[in-house]
Length: 245
Image 1 (tube, rainbow, N blue to C red):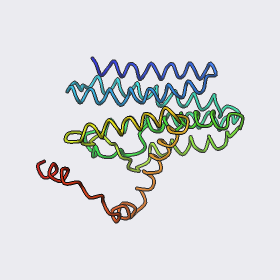
Image 2 (cartoon, one colour):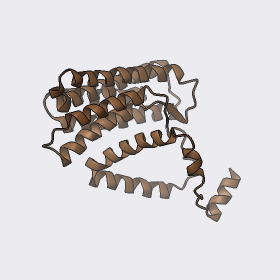
Image 3 (cartoon, rainbow, N blue to C red):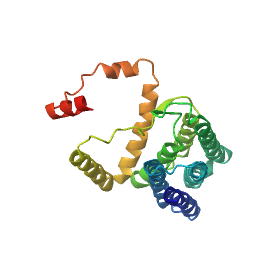
Image 4 (cartoon, rainbow, N blue to C red):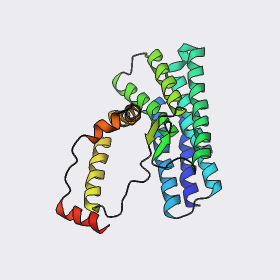
């Protein structure tokens, strides 16, 4: 039941985000979507770590994701910026929801077919993070500017990316065993400090960089260009550790 409690936290954040958006608290609603993303990450991690994955958990997680990363972002951006556009605005929010649902359905069907190293299309949590971080970024830096058209274009683009065939890195198989825990803690501390100090900018940059990386890797020959850069030489102790593994 432990992974399901995290999934319950995910869907609670999504529902609370919808209520906050209706009440006019756009920034709070956006942060709740980002918090739901952390719950979504941990429920899967815990399920795999405790070997407690189940068909019920998979279906419950998908339904929670549709609420937190489909309905909640759609309602948020519509009430926040797209409502003055009329039909174009609510159709953008609806398209985001539909593409998110299709993305989840395709993932559930292809989960045992495609490689776990990459996602086929932009994952719906990152699509929701992109919209939520845009709300936070805009409300902090440009609170009195109406950019409905640009936001509508962003929503349409993110929706299309979710149902595209562009490959995005999953980061599920990042090796942890054999790594220096001291270095991991230092890096994690630095990341937390950066997020805490400039969270209005950090979440937006992370979401934008992830989407841009997938688009760049879709360009033929881009990975070959990256491969031409020299790799950092491993230290003697790390080389010995690699040889033992």
